[in-house]
Length: 511
Image: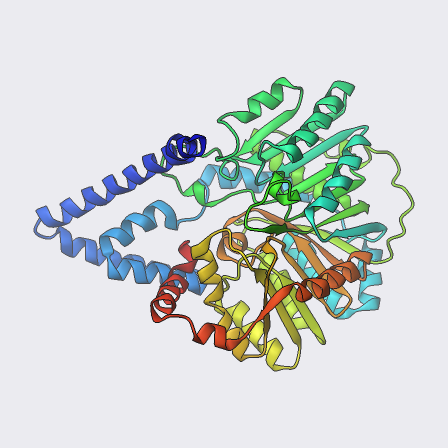
């Protein structure tokens, strides 16, 4: 009964219904207008054609264009309604300006050590070019003197997160898409409260949409009463707005500027398998220690300043933890962020460059495989050239329609020689690439349109760091726990299922 009551009267249901009623009202008004006035219908159709021409000439992903054009031409009234409400996936002009100013300030404190870049160039020119792209177009330097540790599951990472939190002496920063009350978050919250009483500066950012089913409204106020500085990103309100499309999907924990964690792991019990949802929940993460942590610290401060409209003395946190300990890290580490509002698709380009650079193999973990033609072509061409391309997706889905859509991309990949596996024990939420025993990236970025084009994301690019071999080892172990999919699997699907998958692929950028 409690679950039913929460489903019927929860904040997501109430706000969702309010928004649905507004969409219906807008649609009905437009529909009535088109049929009550002689030339209104012609005007709406003309407007639809003009809008299609505008969309065609936008420098955006072609798959997104196709979805909107199809919807607008099939049903001009519905298409116009949805496009003007949801199709313009940008914040308001004032918000974009504020975000730009915040990013400019944060970037001014991300300074590249040129000797590091020259050392990378001397080792591998192609990797140097990737790092230069992330530096020049993302604004994120590459670092040496940084230790790395990869985690093949949430339980292992959680233990080290608690240890790092207990060691905090100066500050703790947390930024997460999902927070849910339970064993995991309560264990962390107990430490945060204790550290706040000790005088440690504690700040937490959560995404309001990501937490809408897990936390009550204005939850940040409760934490503020405990001495924890807290802010909610983009609060979800029952008012139609394009800003609902942009969410903070990052997962960041920084302690004293010397230790940082990121990956796919949120602060909820399913991520450490204290509760079961969709079988065993496999997720991954990475810890970095040393100079490279500044990339994550800087990312957090930029988002904090945007949300609270504040200004920071970034230099306070550059050396807050004192001199960095001697590092054993002999590779290169480059934390990076991605914003949907800067016109640069950093995460997708990082992934594409890894695929195109591969000489022996590229292994991929992703919970969703909803890709555009460019990514599909890159994966297929790599496999056709003899590269061992393997992708692992979940065996048990969290969203059945999205799972059907993921499987809709299997056939062209399999025909080109890509090997696809489904993780039999349960749901795989990891987001990792590893290539040729030298390169890897671990972060929050899914292979879907929302992660690649609409969300704020983060990751860590690695070259010859210790974690690279650890990612590869986990991939090899996971292949053994997974079912390899064949082309026969795709060809044996019922015709109605394949028809539904075709429709879902057409509308994928809108989902």
